[in-house]
Amino acid sequence: MSPGIDFAAEVTKTSTGEALQFWVLAAVALIGALATVFMKKAVHSALALVTTMMCLAIFYLAQGAVFLGIVQIVVYTGAIMMLFLFVLMLVGVSSVDSLKETLKGQRIAAVGLGLGFGILLVAGIANASITHFTALATKTPGGRPVYPAETNDEALRAASQGNVQGLAHQIFTKYIWAFEMTSALLITAAVGAMVLAHRERLVPRKTQRELSEERVRENKQVAPLPTPGVYARHNAVDVAALLPDGSVSQLSINGTLRARGQIRDVSAEAVHSVAELESAGADADDEAWPDESDGPSSAPVPTARQEHDDADSSSGGGSGNEVAAGAGSKEGRP
Amino acid sequence: MNPVNYLYLSALLFTIGAAGVLLRRNAIVVFMCVELMLNACNLAFVTFGRMHDNLDGQIIAFFTMVVAACEVVVGLSIIIAIFRSRRSASVDDASLMKW
Image (cartoon, rainbow over all chains, first blue to last red; front, side, top):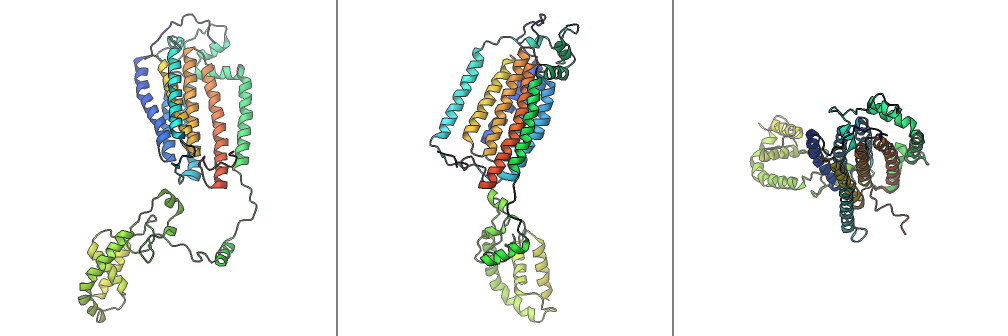
């Protein structure tokens, strides 16, 4: 656009401020990119990628591409990455990368190819003998390009009014066909997304009645699924219900938590406390049981008493259930 | 600082993205690595535009962003469609057309 500018002295250095922000943010961007590749969970990868994109946006701003910098933040980190996170939540939170190699030696080959490619690229750039930047000289400290306002070149005059004006002039004159193609592309993408993501329902949705009848017919899990943490000490959703033998009931935990491996298994603890209870109960029974017959109320059942003993012996993790059970059995005592 | 460092950074980011595409199995992460490569290209475009003192580099980067947005929309809906039929987002599982 500006072969006619002759006052653009050849400069090879940026300002110190820009150099400083480059070295700091380049490190951050590289770490973000590496984290994108190597993080185990896809959500962490997405967040690392957001970091890298933010750094790139600042690089655009520093290089005078004000419009692109803002678009990078608004469109890329704001819209596209959020779309990624949406789909991740919809699809892949539970999906962990398989470590099995389907192709033999693929990992090593990939790393080798990556390294080779990187070395090739860097060597190519280093070989290209880029010694000067013309644009640097035509910028004022504010980053705004200074063009001769009296020039006959309309593009130059537009560019002298600012980054957005310059871009607009170019897009709507020189690149108008590319711009029109873009609109066709966007329409096609929108229609394509609707076609691909839309699911045609071939059979009507089953009602609750039909579902329950089906369960009875199959005679599989006729009763509702067990709820998590249905015993006195824990009632959090990630604590699995215990089966009679003290093992964990996987069914009682939400499928997502199960896939993430976020089940809090307290079965060992429970077995331990039961054992404690039994040993404590052996000597406690002698004095505790006779009292019950002449107590003011016969409400407390043995289980409530056991809970009370349990709470006494293990003095921790006070939940509401425990207190209620304890109060019930205390009433039974004189 | 020589501004050519921006190009080196862009090359490194592109390489990391390419390695990620080859290494990862989760389709969404692969996709994010593709985005990283596109972004690295954009940085190179903007830097080249600045080198030659014109706006064409920025305009190409702008069009790249538009194309990337379309690509993300279509690609993510393909991933959702595959996930619906196979209950998996791993690229290894979509092997129906494997020779």
